[in-house]
Picture: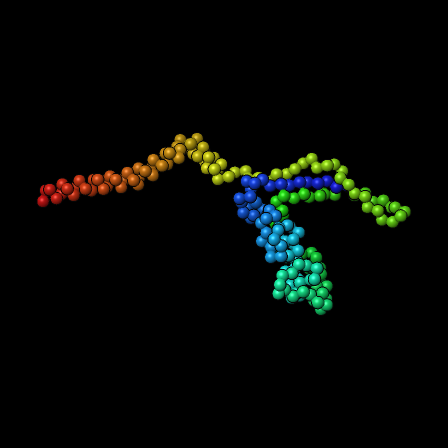
Length: 193
């Protein structure tokens, strides 16, 4: 069996985004009840334990449990064996994100041979990992602001300063004009009568 590894890493700029935006979780962003660190496997285990508790009212003894949670006895294990297909396939949806920094191993070549001494598994890397995927923020807020400003300047012939001048003209300048003009009109009106 020959394996190949694919490394995925996420830059620090993506750490400020919410997990729902970047579609992954860092190790220190655990929302799990049973573990202070996050991993995809631990999330699936917690999801499977919650499903077992929902189906049978207990958590299997080989899962980590919190205080107050019932551990399955013989009747609980019998109940779990009835639902083993559901528990193994996990057809229900768990909202488990993959790890942001991870290594995935893919089987490249599976070659089986008969061996006279019994089963023998030989495995190794076909090639050392040469490719590394990076998860990063392409456009931040300032990038979008610069992009929109550049497009407005190119197509509309205006800039952010133009918009500020328009706001100034229709708010502060108008208020100043009304207060000054209103005062002089009242003074003239009072002087005539």
